[in-house]
Each structure stands twice: as structure tokens, then as C-alpha cells.
Image (cartoon, rainbow, N blue to C red; front, side, top):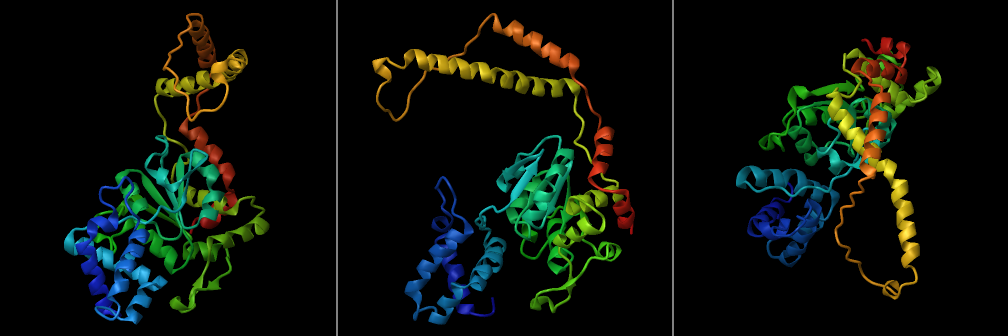
Length: 362
């Protein structure tokens, strides 16, 4: 922020004077930090030649200008004036119990999930989709975890595993999850000992003989290895899904359980029975709807168009239906087979190989 010092002084003053407008206080949806950045830029334009220079204004409009606004100016406003920074738009994806969701759903995940795996890139998260059925919710952003992701994980109590490239940014992602940073120290969103580093780590790179590539010039070309490099193990070790096999192998070496948590059998039956009976009625309901439509098709009331149709709320209780549902439910309960944590954990070993696990024991 030393560069264009006058610019950032004006920006901070405008934030203080127009905070409510900038973040959208009173609106149903608060403005994002990116949206506020454009609004503030509009306020800066009339100040060219008065309080700021044209060079200042043009710098504000660059990617570096936005990064300074987001990562330097706003943390100072939080720390010095107690202002809440607008959130950046959530970017990323979650795989939870085998289903894909937007990352905003991270706060409402499967209660039997044992923990989370934060992945640096969405492609690698997709490769771990099956692992979400073994008790580990997969979350991927776009590089570093956003404040929103860290806040949501902080509000939880389960373990968080970090999977990332072997380079400076990868290590930074692990540290951003577990440790305080200069920009977020005041927010208390570091997860501490709950974060477990899966790598890539240097010892894994050497053990697996993964090819290195030079880092970008800003990191002086130091060797790095992306998670994508694990794909060479598909040929070397005949692995169908190398990223998944590596992740499971690392979890095994760290004695992490590969299974959803257990719950009371009766609670489990209640949940599954509700879904089973509701799903079982869907075909009957659909047939009934079609029959109703056929009977009213020619009535004058139902000709033409409308914006909406207001139906009265109706609870249909057919005396002859409930006993049949009970009989069906009891039959299903009788045939239910329960599976233990240990059984699922052993099954998960099929996602990796003994050879890979041995190589990762370094």
C-alpha cells in the first residue's frame, strides 16, 4: 500500500463515509466485495486531479489494485475501525455423501461425515467424489480457502484434511487453514490442530519419483509438483484413479478412519423408512395425478392460461393406506442388513493399493 499512498487514503475515507451504501446495509442480499469495489471506483472518478491522480485511478482499476483493496485495505478497516468486510462470492464445490453441491452448502453437510478434505483444485476434488461416501466431505475452492470457507469450517468441530500441490502456494493453503495470518488474525478463524496435512509433501514426491516443474518467476523457479502429476501413477502402478488412491493411502498411513460415523439403528431406520415409503408412493401419486387431469381436461374452468393456481392445503389420510405402509415398512425392516464402521473402513482399502501405502510410509 506504500505505492499510491494518497489513493488508498482516499479509499479508506470513502469506506468510512459510505460504509452502509458500500456493503448494502438494509438490502436482502449484501453486496459482494467485488461489487463494492466497482461502486467505490465510480466515486473516485470525480476526484481525479483533485485528491487523486489519473495514474492513481488507473492503478485502482488493475488486478493488483483490486487485490490491494481486498487483501490490504479491508483487513485494516476491520482491525482499526471494526468494520465487517463484505464477502467475496463463494467459489467452489462440495461433494457430500456422493452428491455434488455448491460450496455455500458447506455449512449443511451430512451429519455422519467424519470430517472434511479441502482440495486446492476442483479437478482433484472431482477425483475424490467416491471418498465422500466414506465419511469425508470434499470441499474445493479455487486456490486458497476463502474467508467464508474458513468461517464455516471453524463453526464445525470435525477434522479438516488439506490436499494440495507441493509448492509454496500449497504449503500456504495448509497454513491458511490451520494458522493465523496477518490479514485474518483478528477474525479467529484458524482451525489449529484440527487441520491435518495430506501433502503433497516433499517425502512423497521423492518416494513416488514424481517429476518436478519450475515454479513461476515470483517464486524464483523453485521445483514444484502439482497434484495432477500423480496421474503418471496410472501407467506406472496401473491405478485407475491415482489422486484418490494417493489420498486414501495417505489417510491410511495417518490412521484416519475411512467410514461415516455410526448412529443409533432406530434413528437410522426412521430416516431411511421415511425416504423409502415416500419414494415408493411416487409412482402411485403420479398415476393419480394423470387420472385427475384426464377427468378435468374438458371442464371450462381449466381452459386458457393463468399466472398461478391456488390450491387448498389438503392432508389425505386414507384409512386403508396406513396399514399397508406399516406392513411394507416392517417387511423392509426385517430384511435390513446393518454395516459397521470397520466393515466400511476395510472396503475403502480397495480405493488404493498395498504397494502405494508402503511407498507413502516415509
